[in-house]
Length: 210
Image 1 (cartoon, rainbow, N blue to C red):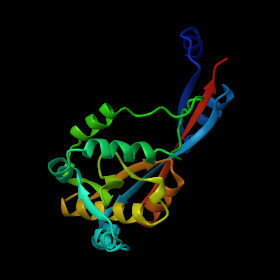
Image 2 (image 1 turned 120 degrees about the vertical axis):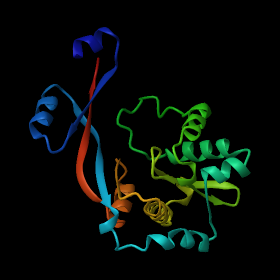
Image 3 (image 1 turned 60 degrees about the vertical axis):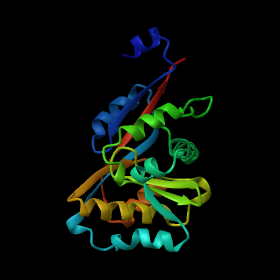
Image 4 (image 1 turned 90 degrees about the horizontal axis):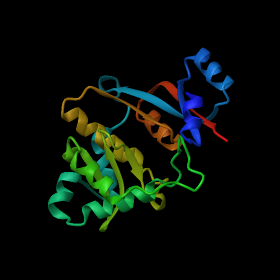
């Protein structure tokens, strides 16, 4: 595989190994791969997650002067919702761990790609968006796209309340739990606060090519 990658002109190869597979990890490190970051997998079972008042989460956000809406409402009410969401997503990527960082810096996400994500979202009523005035400052979805907060609005508890509200919505819809993953230490802290238990971590490793 390494020879094929070199022949194709690759600048590097990425490998992924779970942290509960020590023999596989030792093997891949012997081939010159070094750790980039760890994507931790978490699980919550709603029947056992009663230590947090999920149902008041959105009310607490509104009490703080923020508006909570969802993708379905934004599509109907805001002709600029794709552009606003794209701006939020692009800004929120600041500080996100990258398993395969580009030496020239992070690549931008095209507007067309974000529009496709939104158009293909399975349940737009469950992709929640936090607004401050007309500005989109955070989002959370129980499916696919995850949770993120604009850098200027971080460390205010928004991610915790938004994720908690999303959990309350999912429970009302009949879901019994969720398995998710993140490499962000801040998001890992949010999940653990809300009752998620850590399952394992996927170690992401890079082998650079000359």
